[in-house]
Length: 424
Image (tube, rainbow, N blue to C red):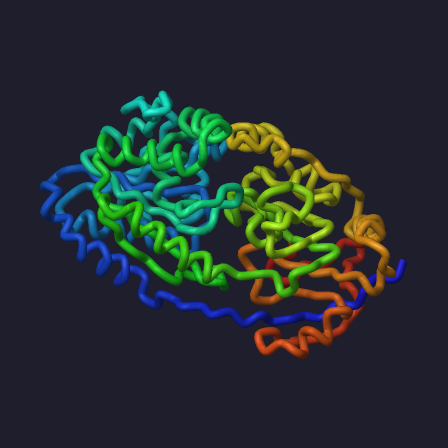
C-alpha cells in the first residue's frame, strides 16, 4: 500500500509564560495575607494530583516554602481519587515520579486512602474527604484549571474538582461519579464543594494554567470565598490558551503516547473531538477525527491506559503494556467503562496503518488526511500528510520545517515518534 508523504510542521500559539515560578507563587500567596489565619506550629496540607502539570514539583515546593515562612508545617497530600491503583503506595509513587519528594520539598508526604465523611449534600450524598488532610489545621488546594474531558459548564477541571474527586479519594470519586449520572456535574460539584469549604479548613487555592506549549502560563492564589467566581474566570483563560490540532477534519490521527499525566482521559477529548461520543465527532465538537491510532503509553502513567478504548487502533506492544487492574479501577470509578477497552491491534505500526487508512473514507491511501502528534498536550511540532501542504502554506500560524518525506519506519516496521526524545 502507498502511504502519504509527511510534512513536519510547527504550530505558533499565543503563549504567555511565567518566568520566575517560585517568585510568582510567593507573590500570589503573600497577597492573601495567610499569616492572619495561620498560627505558629500549625499544619497546612497541600494537595498534589496525578496530572503531569508543568513545573509541578517547583510549584509545590514554593507553596511549602511559603507555609514555612508562616512558621507553620507543610504536609503534602496525594489527591487523585482512584489513581495509582487506588492504593496509598501507588499514589505516593505517582507524585514522587513528578519530583514531589520529601527531600526536594522539605515537607512530609502523608498518603492514605482513608476518608472521613464530613457532611451530606442536599441530594443525600455523603461527602468523603481525605483523613490525613482533614486532620491538618488548614488545607491549600493546588491544581491545574482546564476544560474537563467529559463535562461542560462554568466549572470543569480545577480547584473544585480537586476538592471533590482528588481529596474524596477512591471512596468519594466512586460515589460522586455515580451521582453525576443522576444529577448535573455542576449540581454535584457545587454541593460537595460547599460542604468542603464549610467543614474542612480550606485556607487557599493555587490555580495553575498552562499555555499551548505545556508551560506554566499563570499561577493564581485564590481565597476560599472566591473559589467559584475566580475559577469560572480562570477556566475561560485556560480554554483560550489550549493548543489545537492544525486541521478541523482529519482521517487518521496517530498519537505517539497517551497517559494519565497527559489527560484524565489519556488523550484530551477537547483536542481530539471525542468529548461527547467515544468514537465519533458530534455537532458540538469543533474537531472531527474519523480514526485514532494510539502507538504507546507514557512511562509516567504506570500502565494506566484509561482512554485507550476511545481509539480504533493500536499495536500489540501497547495492548500488552496495559495494567488491566489499574486501568479498570480508574475507568469504572470514573463511570466510563468503555475507556478501558482494547482497540483492534496489529503487530507493527505499518500493519496498523495499512488496516486503518481504508476505513477513513473514499480516498486513496496516499491522499489520506493523516496527522501524527506526540500527545494531546504537545502540539507545537507535528507531522501532517502532503494533502495538507497548500493549506499549511496559506496559514501564517503554520510553518513547514521539513518534507514532504516518506513515513519514517524503523527496521521493525514501527513509526518513529514525532519527537526524537520519545523514542524507546
